[in-house]
Amino acid sequence: MTRSKADVLQGTLDLMVLKTLDTMGSLHGYGIAQRLQQLSENVLQLNQGTLYPALLRLEQRGWISSKWGTSDNNRRARYYSLTRAGRRQLERETQDWERMAAIMARLLGGETS
Image (cartoon, rainbow, N blue to C red; front, side, top):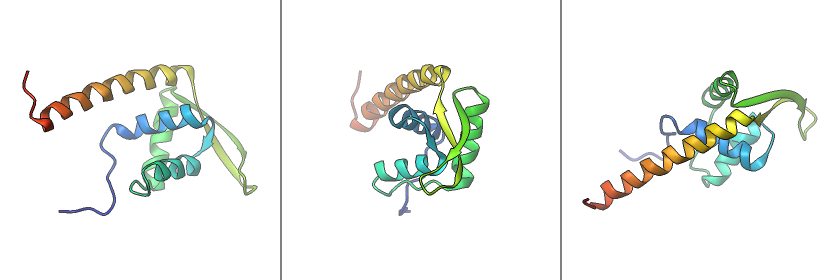
C-alpha cells in the first residue's frame, strides 16, 4: 500500500516539536505545523487533532511553556517556548533517536556484528 502523505511515527512528534522550538524560538501551533510541513517538503501535514494534544502533553510535562500573544495577522494566539527541562528532554530524545537510527541502518543495510 502506497501513501501519499507520511504518517508521524509514534513517539517522534514530541521530538519534532521540541527541536522546532529549540531552533525557531517561540512559535504558535500553526507556525510549528507550517515549519514541519516546510521541512518535510509538504510530505508531513499535521492536523489540529494531532498537534494540539501533543502541545498540551508537552506543556503538562514541563518541557514547553505557553503564553498568549498576537500573531502576525493580528489574531490572538498561544505561543509555545522550550523550557530548561525541555532542552534536557530534547537532548535525551535526540540521543535515543540517533541510537535507534543506527540500529535501523545496520538492520536495513544487512550489517552483521
